Image 1: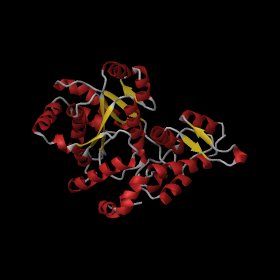
Image 2: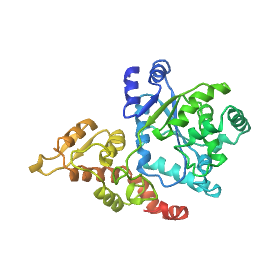
Image 3: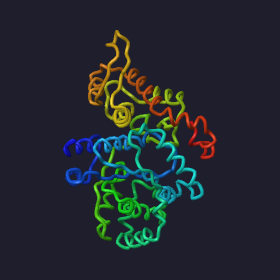
Image 4: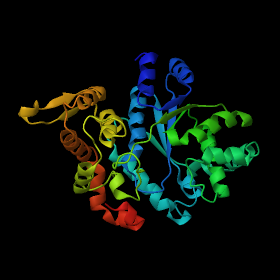
Length: 338
């Protein structure tokens, strides 16, 4: 594959790249670049994470190796979203979800942040980098990711560590959501101050709530998101009630699930329809499905039904695992149950 094609794959569906020119140069000059995505084990793994996961599939096709860092220490630094004594259970839960929920063709390398963040060298670098970082700059970097209600010192350390993770994981690219932009920009600006190179930062859009615009996707509001291990009945009920006005693309969670999850993971989709409405139709590209929907040649009920079947099928492995190991979810608390 030519580097130009690799670049287009790496770029598609992204919200912003810092910078596109650097990504082009990287793909042009390095045969096997490496990226990482970090996920803090703070709550149930839901489909809001999967816009980013779909990008990992694109990276793989583009020859970019990916590491997934389960940021266990970060989960506690963020205003104790995960209590220190819960870290072990939650990080193992997240690892299990990501390993089994996604139909990996090439499985990424999984790393726990605590495997290297507690080393003497890393801790010394935290102190060094923090000595260049003002409270104002750290606050700005952390503002959209951590709670920052009554800011803890730990929340200011959070972006310092996320920046250093790029160096210690030995990667060329960090992948994240657009809500992490301030942290990723901080990493680019401040790593060179301690002698480390800046990396390419690739940001994905945030998926809208199943309830549509104005309601945040949150695991604490069950009807706004779908857990990767939700029961088949729960998936069907949530999709059935999801916001999906005919012909409307903006803030449409059903179309977003197709665009960021189903197409990257599956590659094609078949919508089944009665013969009187045109019969079954297969799509190889998301844009074609979207165009038909805008033209109202696809009914919301038809695309909801097909999406439900796709999600039930894609996540069957992780659903089955937790049906057989329900005690693991119960040990994590009610928020993790369907």
